[in-house]
Image (tube, rainbow, N blue to C red; front, side, top):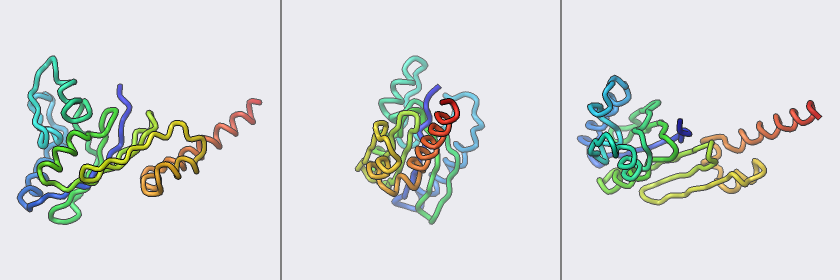
Length: 176
């Protein structure tokens, strides 16, 4: 079982035709109706087509997409005729390979990601990545200083650490 990486993606099409094609794809892939993965359309596969191979699917996806499974889409909403905001999870890491392909194909990409199990968070905007590993931060303030207000506010990382520290203190006090 993987650790889940939370992702938020704002994707802007260059043309209305591309945006409409994406809207149709999202309508299909977010319904999760397919039982045979080889036959199912994939969100990531739309941008980075894959060659299905029973023995090599895992590594070919990791190499091409940056993660082993397609997006597990929670929600998506077009905020204008060209731009969609998508919330999804991936296994272990963000789909950086897909973001690179999107930009190469003319899409505007603004994404953030957060993997709490491995203590990393970041932002990826049109090919520029800011990646932070905060496992060694000992206080909520240190986390916020490292990752910045925007990522911390979006994912609530320093707040979660504060709750953890309070619970740990309470436990220690009650168990001597």
